[in-house]
Image 1: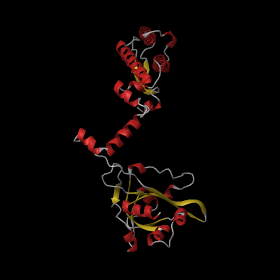
Image 2: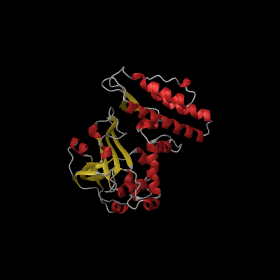
Image 3: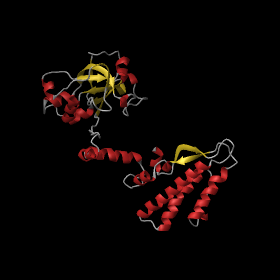
Length: 315
């Protein structure tokens, strides 16, 4: 299906046997291939005509699909010899029969556009989707999210989707002895407990809610760290780490405007209440540069969504 996104002409990686062990052609498979190609030509011709091509132009573009199939499989296909539907049919038969009695267990590649039914092929060929099944799926999911009532009218058992985004801040700390980060933290929101990509707690607890009022009370925010960083640095639940400040934060924030601004402009101490991580974070993120940073100094941490919103609002 991924190959389909390349314009419906890329080999799918799937193959079908066209000769058996006795070097005899398998007529059933040849008929299947021919019927599929014939249907695709008819479908393509109709699609091209709907896009404004003339009868002749649509015919040539559609037959080119068949030519690509035979070319991929190194079978002769003289497209110039096609005069009418009967000559096209004979040319296909001749091409598919070139392996009869010559090569045992011969297999040919199936083009990705052959995998779909003609109905689905027409849908994906719509300019809205551009032959891309991922675009089609994304469109349908977002359509269901934005029109849940209409979806439920069609199927009372259908699911309602909740659209959520993962927030991410990158903090780093350097020293006078090093130009490169000695500690880097990708800070993320823990998210809801019913999300597909929810945080998996290995030990301890999820981070607690933390708001502006908690700052004024002198309360310390809590954080969950990926266990790899904790093991590298001999950290335990109950220990305290510092979320570094960044030059960006110091420039943007004005410590004189509000206690929250002053709080976020400096390093923030956070108490470790658990270890764990999300499935998407099993490997370092895009910010991590392996030849500049030691893995022991790279951490992924999760805080409650309320704390993350407080950071975002202050910035």
